Image (tube, rainbow, N blue to C red; front, side, top):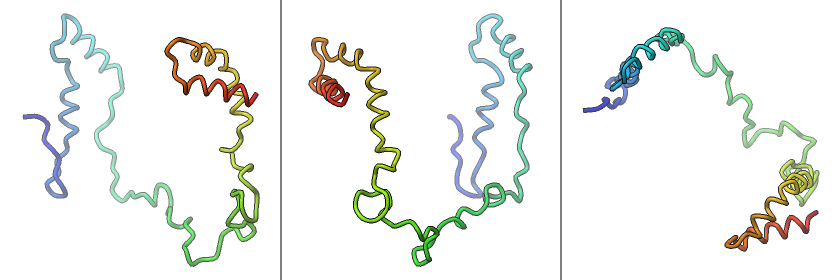
Length: 141
């Protein structure tokens, strides 16, 4: 029949107990495997059933995340930073300050793989895209 499916609310039943029961012994174990499996289980610390979580909630554990959100009609939390900061248009720094646009490190990193990529692109049956990638890498060095 299988493992029962948990229902909503008052009809919910724990379904992880069936898995725990199934892991207590090996089905179809060869000679000596069952004893070795039991020895391993005895040596490993097993999780104790149930931690008391009554009265615990997300706010107690991590704080209130909504307290760090700035509302749409509120004043900015960074008045000296323009809205266009990080964009190539408008006031503020351009996209060169963003870490994703730092391509010099990426091209030197890719250059270390250039001999292997050249070998792969020179193989019969390699794609045009592979050859174009090697050409592009060579042009950037």
